[in-house]
Length: 527
Image 1 (cartoon, rainbow, N blue to C red):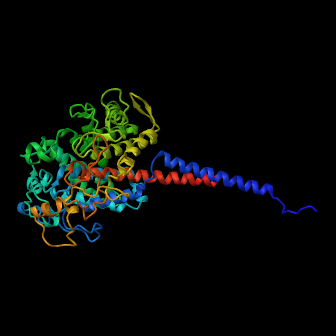
Image 2 (cartoon, rainbow, N blue to C red):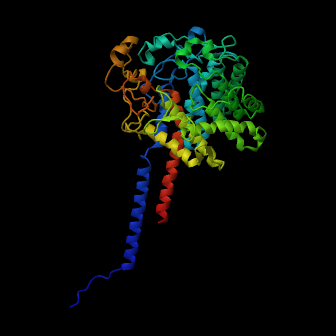
Image 3 (cartoon, one colour):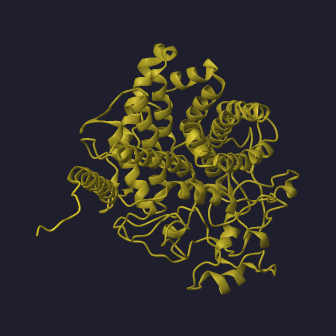
């Protein structure tokens, strides 16, 4: 007797099996692609955390919407002795000094981040926080610029030496809050120039949403530029008190060119462009081939912004000079990519991190990642290639290298550590930072004095009681080694100008990841 079986629907079954196999293989390929190219990082989360850091660094009376709750009001008498209101602004690092030059550069970079990546920052839900971070700085600069040729607190409020003998929370400060100024008899063109650049860039940020404020910023920026240009000198020559902290090694010419260029972008006034063109040679704009971009040395950023003007028809008459700016900008980009044919490439650690110098090296990594990302976008939008001695480079390769530096920061490194505090499972626990390393003022309002902080908190082996979320610490040494100790300030101290460039870059890579996911979902859907 013949055994009866259920009909075998081979056609339907084979198609179904084929689809399942194809889908499985596709998902496997996608997974392999993600895991082999890099670790998966949440750039949106990194962006959110980076903006929180600026709230940790606020000086002055904190607003009702302050999110970093272990901080409280501080520095409420700044400028009182001089009869000026200098309350506000940012502490630049782990101490309580407000240095004007790095603070202005921080605001310039935050503003440039929003100018370049506004849509991406908005898509991540962080535009309001980014603009608040900028305005906290520019509100302070407006206060500090009390007359056309006087800029207060641009150097620092507080005695740097006295401050460094103290280890206490900003809320407990008892150190001298001495304010310094630049004026006609004590000029500081670099400081006036960078503050003008910050305010001009910020004016572009607020142009549509707060036109009155943008106009006010431009008014101050133009006055500061005129002041810096008319009374030319380095600020550390006029005010020797800053020489041990933020000496202006590059001089003031780069800041004056930088300020003029941002003023041109903000006003469209030809006189500022003519300044950038006419002084290109004498001020080193097209002479200096630089391999760092920092609070002190603006040339690479200047050269990159100037080179982007080339694609606009109205700048054709200046194309010869702008091409020279571009050649220097590309020298910087190529040096980061290790594609110059001389010794002018940036060194790297064995694991591939850009390495400029021992002290707070990460500041140069974050600025490089920013410039690389911006230039990659420029190459893509203008359908151009990067011309290096080591060959022609496409925009994808430039962006990929920027990503490698960002991923190193976030944990793709030999220490398997995120150097962005508060991000990921492992990050520095003993950041060299007074406020973070001492019990929160909101938890314990008992006064903690200068030496008491050193005695009871500085030398503790335990992690900091407050997490300095979003701070980019100084980072590893030239061999990728990092020692997480509070007294290892070369590696564990963070600064506002370290994190500021990351805001734009995190936003960009957040968008890139979303696009990849959309593409992958599209591939799956097509099957």
